[in-house]
Length: 240
Image (cartoon, rainbow, N blue to C red; front, side, top):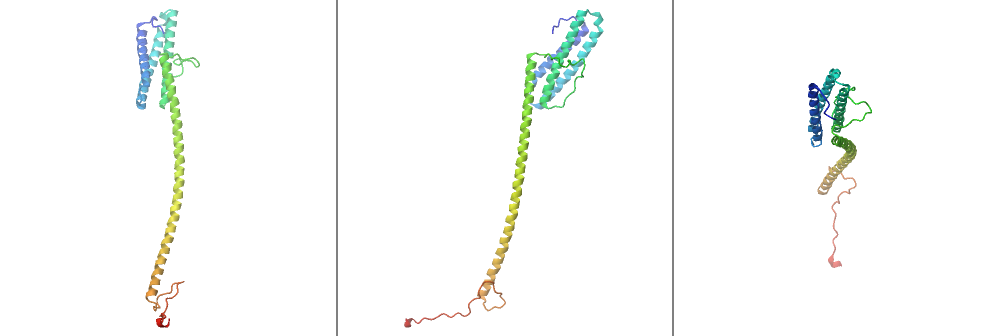
């Protein structure tokens, strides 16, 4: 946009402040991709948002002065000044679009900046980028970051689903192992009881062998009583 449009000193002052903000916005967005820390990116975006609010205020001030001076200027000058104002609105809106792109990629809460009306480009009207190719490249990068964020979210969902599945399998395995441990415990109790009974039977057998005439020692079921006064046969070696 040509800067040789005749302007009053007051308009020149406001226009100069607006151009300074546009340069700061351009440099600020170019630095966004160089900042790796998300919290610092958010802080940078907040600073740029504040500059855009101030720029919007100045454009409204520019429009107010333009209307006050409209009768003093020729129709051609008024047309040039209005074209300049519209160009500034479009340039500011291009930064608004860029801000929304980065904001979406960062997942921040939406910040309402501009009201619908004269400060917004009419629906369906293409927005002219402020810094031409550099801003287009930044928007492309911002969209790429949004795609990467969506992919990261999908990967996170898959990890969560896999974790839930593993947890369910682990719970089922633990349940089976618990039942198995209960069965083993019951079997150990049975073995312990059998060993105790066997120990008692061994003791009883020992007593009967040592004291065969003791009537107080009960017989062991299935066990024959010890032999009484068994005589050994003598063999006459000479009779052979």
